[in-house]
Image 1: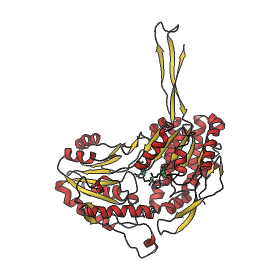
Image 2: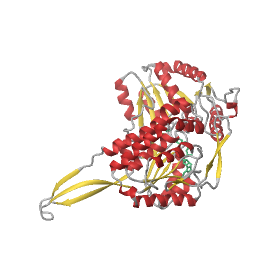
Image 3: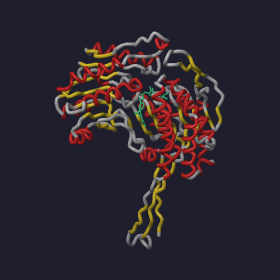
Image 4: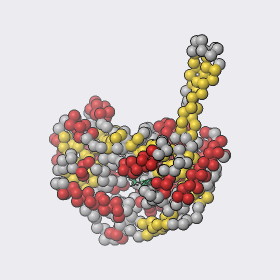
Amino acid sequence: MKPAHYVNGVFAPTEATFPLLSPVDGSQVGVVPEASRDVVDAAVRAARAALDGPWGRTSVEERCAFLRRIADGIEARFDEFVAAEVADTGKPRDLAATVDIPRAIGNFRAYADLAYGRPERAYPTTVPGWSGSGQALNYTVRRPLGVVAIISPWNLPLLLLTWKVAPALAAGNAVVAKPSEETPSTATLLAEVIGEAGLPDGAFNLVHGHGAGAAGEHLTSHPGVDAIAFTGASATGAAIMRNAAEHVTPLSFELGGKNPALVFADADLAEAVEGTVRSSFTHSGQICLCTERVYVQRPVFDEFVRALAERARALTGYGPMISAEHRDKVLSYYRLAVEEGATVQAGGGVPTFGDARDSGFYVEPTVLTGLPQSARTVREEIFGPVCHVAPFDDEDEAIRLANDSPYGLAATVWTTDLSRAHRVAPRVEAGIVWVNCWNLRDLRTPFGGVKASGIGREGGEYSLDFFSEPVNVCVKI
Ligand code: NAD
Ligand code: 6OD
């Protein structure tokens, strides 16, 4: 399968391309087409035409049936999707086979259920003396926004793309999607499946290419785009927002994080250590929800650091950073941490394997201690397999440290004191707080962040709300 643009129901021929590299060994494994402004224009035109054609006349039942067929289509080619995701990202196969691809299928099924079962309100109204009988029925219908641009990152490529495509289609929009330039393959397979599912031409379009000054920017500044749903870095969000301001285009943003974990002395320490190994090192820390700041109550601090560092040193089978550029960024933070005075408890460098992976983009799982809260290493998102562990004395200090961040995406709280859990969770400035667990997701729940971590919420009804416009109809009785 070769990555290709998909516009108006056909795979468009490729003009300019750039190389696709394997993060596992740095070898070139393919080429990716770079969409010109003309290709982006054609995709936006096709989407607009779809809204004026059969797609714009579909009922919610028909759209939900399409979503289920798409889910079935991905499932039927499950191994192909897993292999493509592994090839693009280098992530362990197990992760792609248990999270990325099943969740992508789940996104289509969940939104088919949610959109079909969605109630709307009606208000019988009486205003005595007004307009004859003074009686009316108010009810609300939901209209799609129109042409929506969906821009997704490389870390969970199909999962995060479908997380937006499924509700956008369920709500009746026409989509122009641009996946990350690093991970074009599962998006292209998705376009094949969508074509096979019989979605009317133009309802889903896919353009590949870079972001700034290229396909991503062409799309998000396009006057024909009615809304933008973006997942990626906060700085990119700011750039998109500047372009979107020109046309006052509505935005939904899922951005970066610098997520804290709070480990109280009453926690089940073994569980807290294992949970933090997962939350800091899953997908080599390249998940927006990963923990990069760990605060541990002083009586158990030394024991926690010892156990976490031991587990980090023992990790094997982890995947690489997505690119040489990202590896270099993570390594620059490993060096910065030392310059800032950190003690490296585990990792801090590049592993050697004695095989082809030595040409890949790997870094060691790393545990740091000893930095002040003001250190850049503690404040800036690194997006690699690294966490800094610092002590705290009481609940108020833990909450103050957790909230002392420009970000506010997710947090974890480790405690066996139920009252403490309920007290602490709502005081943490984050969109998602997990207690004694991490990344346990129900697709119906709100997902998103505060501060520099995002604007709005997606997930369940929240996504359907973003991707549609309520229209109140008032009928005189
Ligand atoms: P990125 O912002 O560099 O790129 C994301 C997407 O935006 C890519 O498709 C890219 O081509 C495009 N893009 C880049 N510049 C653009 C521009 N000027 N205009 C339009 N499009 C542009 O992010 P990334 O490196 O792919 O992903 C990592 C980042 O994403 C991290 O900061 C991570 O925290 C964040 N992230 C957040 C969530 C969340 O749900 N909150 C989920 C995953 C990743
Ligand atoms: O699990 C999800 O649905 C989700 N949106 C995960 C986001 C992960 C960010 O990297």
